[in-house]
Each structure stands twice: as structure tokens, then as C-alpha cells.
Image (cartoon, rainbow, N blue to C red; front, side, top):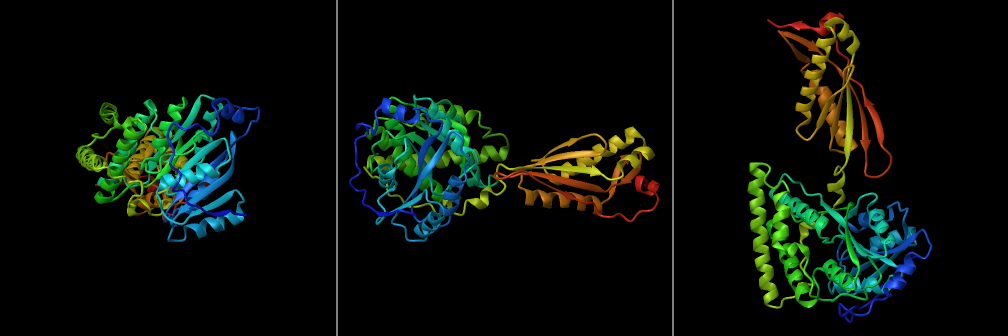
Amino acid sequence: MSLHTHADAGSGRASALALPAHSFETAATDILSGSSTLSCSVGIMAYNEEANIGAAVDSVLGQVLCTGEITELIVVASGCEDRTAEVVTEISRRDHRVRLIEQPRREGKASAINLFITAAASPVLVMVSADVLLKDGALEALLRHFADPAVGMVGGHPVPVNDEETLLGHAVHLQWRLHDRIARRTPKLGEMVAFRNVVPSIPVDTAVDEISIQAIVTQLGYRLVYEPDAVVFNRGPSTVSDFLRQRRRIYAGHLRVAEQQQYAAPTMDSFRVLRAFWGSGACSTPRAALWSIGTVGLEVAARALGHYDASRGRSPHVWEISPTTKRFIAEGTSGHDQQSVLVFHITDYHRLQLELGGHAARQLTKRAAERIAHVLGPHTTVAVKQSGTIVAVVPSAREDAQGTAHAVIRDFDESPATPLGHGAFARLALSCGIIAFPQAGPPSAESITPPVLDVGPATSLATQEVF
């Protein structure tokens, strides 16, 4: 049964150095009192997230945990005008851990976070954005760090689903690669964070809530941890206006936290950013170099605008939503970070080996592998194995891999002559097996049979002289 609460968090303003809800000793005792299971409360703050909220909640509830357990998942819906609350209510009917808190008016994400902090009862709180999806094992990777009583906050590894073959897609991927490289040296946490229940509230006018929490946790004496294995998929802006709007708001928010809470995010350090940029592969190709220069230009412009907003005292804590970041994110993760293995085999290989000889048959397999690699493209790894077997690793989900395998087989069927050298050609047929490794569930396997070739004797299959 879900709990629906209508609340006003306008009075949630608190000093960053207010006394924590638990003392250091009490918090450590709560978590390490002999129980092997760490309970956590998950909070999702949502404003008009009808497109993604169901998938986001399911990706949290579907996490398999060994270190801890999710005792409650609280969604704070702030002034939503779409079906966000209805979707959450429906989920709560089938999972008693899900609770809904409805805020009548949209008062900013920080206000919603303060409602979550007040309502949550577990010793560890996890905050997940409403427009992200968790990779399997992400939550477990966060929670395991809390076995160390010195750790106060852990952040995940955001990975965008944007198409990197576009200018804005390149910009978003570069941004999060730099974030990853910087956070590995000096933790900068965002998109998905877990922290001890020692934060009474955060300033309601902050526009960068994770950094505000990070500042409080650090000032309370706890250690920060960045966990690269806790992957969370998000979607960045896909238009210049949305990119500038988002980056402008974030930079202005960082400046305000530096002034209000005396804490600077690691990404505010230009030296750290330049060092991360240098080894990021941002200029690996001429096109990448050009787009990276464009990304730097956009970031400089956004920071200049953010500095202007901060100097004028503008508080972007209730910000304009960037529409292109709210598209259905699951579409972008269907093949993201998945791979499939295609195992091709030259049919009648042993007969070819007898007719052509071992060396010629091996050369034939090598030529076939080169042809397969050409069809599959540069993002595929192809290896030649024994007895006419060729293995290809493709970065795609099962459905896409199946289509790819069919394309390879069709290519050999429609253009069956494979050159052997010295004017000799061999006509080949391939069979294929697919092993797919999805993000959730066990690996799946299937086979694709080759087309039936209408050929004469074995010798006509093996070689055709071309004059």
C-alpha cells in the first residue's frame, strides 16, 4: 500500500553545519552493529517525468543486492502536471516498498530532497535522478563501501546514451568522460549518490544538490568515494540551447555553493579539467578535435553566462527543464554497454581442406575473416580460430546482432566468390551462432543456418578459375 503525502517543504532551509541526524558513532553503530544487511532508503525526485519514471523505479527495484536491501523507495513528485504520480501509484500497488509524496507546487529539487531526507528512515540514503537507469549491480557497488565507517558518501559513474556521432552527442560524452577522469582522482559525485543519514537538510536555493550534500558530508568529517562500477545511464542535451541552459545553471550553482557553503567542486579547478582533457582522447581524430574545440567553446560560454547569473544574485534552483534530456532513456540503453559474440563457421570446411590443402584452407579462412570485418565495420573485433571458425565481438544487443549476422551471411550468399590468389576463387557458405550478454538476465544463444547453395561437385564449390 502506498503512502500519499501532500507536503510543503518551503521551511526546509537549514545551515550546512547543523547537527547531523545521527552522531558519527551512532551512524556507524546503526550500520555495523552485527547485521550483515545494510538497509537503505532510495529517493527519486520528479517533475513531469512520465516518460522515464516507471523505467527508473523498475531499474532500482530490479537491483540484486548482497550487501544491503532496499527498505523503501520514496518518489517526491513536485507539482507534476502529467501522469508521473499515477505511474508511481500503479507501481506501489505491486511493490509495498514504493511510497509517493506529492508536493502541491514545484519549489525546486532541493526542497523535494529535504522532504525525502525527512521521510527516510534507513541509515543510508540513496538519491537517484528520475531520468536515469541503473545498470545491474550499480546499487550494490555503492552500498558495499559503507562497511567502512569513515565513508560518508559514494557516487556512481554516469554514462550518457546520446549518439556520439553528432556534435552534441560528442560534447555530452566528452563532458562525462572528463567527469569520470576527474572523479577517479578527486571524487565529484552526481546523478546517483548514496550517503549516510547524517544530513538534516540542504539549502533550498541550491541548484546543484549533490554538491551541497557532498559539502555537508565532507565538513562532517566523512570520506567521499567515487565508484566507477556503479554505472547509471543518463541522457544529455541534444541541442545547443539545452546544453548551454544546463551547463549555465550548473556553473552558477557551483559558484553559489562555493560562496554559501565554502566548498568548491573539483570540476571548478581548471588545472584538473585540463589534465583530464589531455588524456581523454578528445583529439584522436580530426573530426573529434574539431568537435572537442567546439565543446570547449560551448562550456566557456555557459560558464560566462553562469558567472553573470551568480554576480546578479540569480538563484536557478527552480530551473527551466531541458526538453531533450527527458526523452525515453531506455531506448538509448537497449544496446548500450552490451555485446554479442558471433561465431561464424565455414560449412564443409574439412572438404575444402582436403581439396585445397591445409595452407590454402587457412588462407581462405583469413580472407573470409577480412571480408566479415569489412561488413561489420570498425567497431567490431574479429579473430580467426581453427577449423574454419571466425569469432566476431559486436557492441550490440541480441536483436541487432542477429540482423548483423544475417547481413554477413547474405553478403557471402549474394557475392559468393572469395579470392584465394593466383586467379583462384572459392565459393563459401557460412553458418553462425550468436551468444548475447544482456544487461539483465542470463546470456542467450541461437543459431543461424546458412542458405542452401545450388552447386555441383565439390570441386566446383572449392575453386573457380577466372581468366
